[in-house]
Image (cartoon, rainbow, N blue to C red):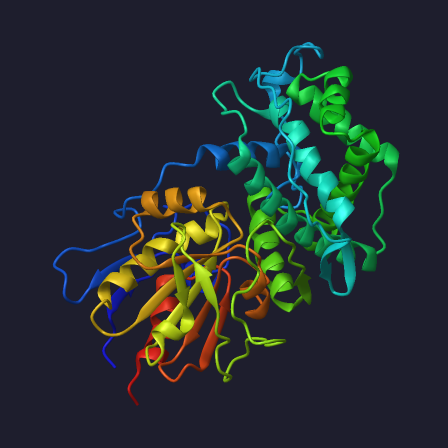
Length: 418
């Protein structure tokens, strides 16, 4: 069948590494529609300014090892001589800001059979909230309920990634001591110009203590050591990140991950058949989810049409990076029967609405508030895309970021009339 756009792949790693974590706008693929006179590329598509909450969470991530499982925090030369008892640079206070753990189960997830306990999850969320005002910049916004809920979701994803890293490190005999964890904490505090008393006050504000942060940093040191001595020994910082990104996507794809849902004050009936699991060459599990505005949408509404399901989250950089391609495909095929449906993973409707608006997404976007649909479709990494033919059968499942070439090839299969 005729290709729906021509692609010039500028970067040789782009065709191979579609699952890599990259900032939106760094992708250099150029897309040219056969019907359009001018080229369209991600850099020409309106891109959102970073969310305030995402900015804040990324800052926290630099401190507590977010995003890259604790890849080494870049040391700030400007802070090495700063006094240790200066006030938090932002002056922020999160007094009274607490995460809601109503209905939290004893086990929130399992990774290759190992449990992530609800208590450990709650403690890491509280640690994020405690560290935020110490790490934030002067223009960082105060946290509100939306920001807290986004932190809650992100922490769970990062704990799953960390569990995979710890399992691999254990297999390699890599360990770390509490003394090494304390040394890492001291280094971070020095770079932030934060004193011990300030840290203890921040921890106390979230009902946690030094044992929690020490456990976190001991695990962080273990994973760092595995990355630097096994995955990327002798590699540069950029090469290490690339190696880690590829490794993590591969491990998340192959790992047996189960995330347990818990009642967040919303209906948990999403219309899934009991015990169903999505598989290639099998019928796609039916479901009903809500839009950010509260409307109900069912997969059955699209019966007889080829469908692409794209699972994403607002905090996920590769999700944002692939969105221009997906939006372009939605526009290009709006009259051909193709239906593209975005599914956000358990985030606040207000946050999701802002994301959709800033990215100018026109295809339907739903929210999997309980995570049940994501579990049924075996979403082990974000983004994940599911390609369903007009007969309702799953043709392909792609875990990780899509580039233009990959997206075209997948869509060719489900749009083919042969």
